Amino acid sequence: MKPFPVKSDKLDVRGFDNRQVVKIAQDFFKALMHKTKRQLYIRSAYFGKKKIFFTYFWKHLYQKSPRQRRIRIVYLPCAIELIQKCRNAPDSMINTSKEIEMFHRFTGITKEKELFYVQIKENIKTDRKEFMSVFPAKG
Image (cartoon, rainbow, N blue to C red; front, side, top):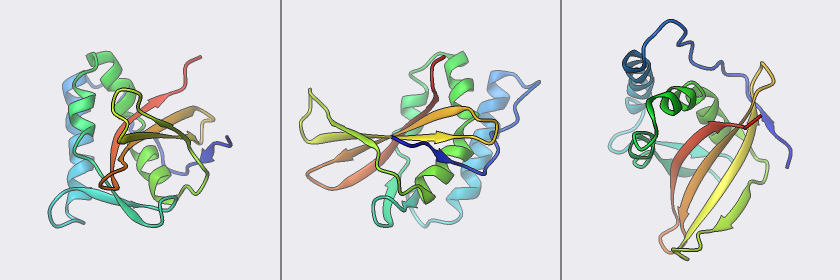
């Protein structure tokens, strides 16, 4: 799978504590919220301009440790650009515990040549897609 090169910069959070980093990310989300009427969503190029919602993102993020939260939040602008513009096929797998769910993992690369992944959960029955997570590649 070929990584999608993004032009967006990662969030610059050097010198901030973890609470301030979350505040920076929430401010970034507020700017996106003004573009939609009800629930926050963005349209995906790969899925034929269908909506990708963000209802699970914060819930999933707060299940992680503060250190992991900080690492993941930094890639948020890159993840949003990847979802909006990437047409590369993701790695897709059906959830073994819930067979009506499918996970799609897209690969991206930043300007600094850092590899990261974006995971989207799809409910096969309703065709609803949720942005689950963004995280850097290990190594």
